[in-house]
Length: 180
Image 1 (cartoon, rainbow, N blue to C red):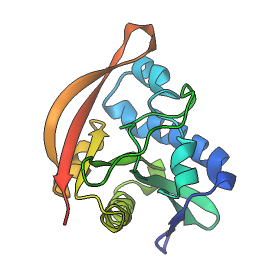
Image 2 (image 1 turned 30 degrees about the vertical axis):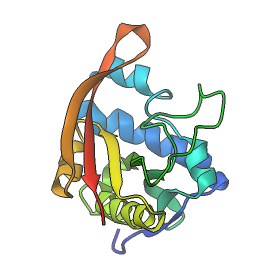
Image 3 (image 1 turned 60 degrees about the horizontal axis):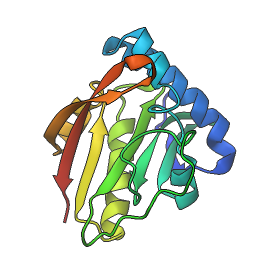
């Protein structure tokens, strides 16, 4: 793992690899913060691929020797988090003059954690957000992701419990940032 992975836009061809990465990352890295039951219930509805981000060209993959080792991006659409399995219609577009862009779905392969991939994905996302004309960003962080976002200038707006199937909940942290 000598060289830094190539950061590029994700494509439809990446979808199976993204699903596998999200599942592995969720089951391994998030297990430090959430129960196995919470993670099982969250895989898919909360932690899953949102194909709309890929179609919009706002989702990135970090590729190392043909393997996707991290992914994440941003959205110009209303959903703050979650996969698209249960979504029936296209998510509405946000207005950059009025709404905050969304940081969405950051996942890293366990062998690549703490190597700067989250920061690289965040920098690419924020640059694209500014280019799209947004001046505010919001996100829903996991307990594992909160330190990354806090270290990059995001402020906690609220801590909430996202409902999951089976009557479970998942702690998420709504965070915000203003960009110029």
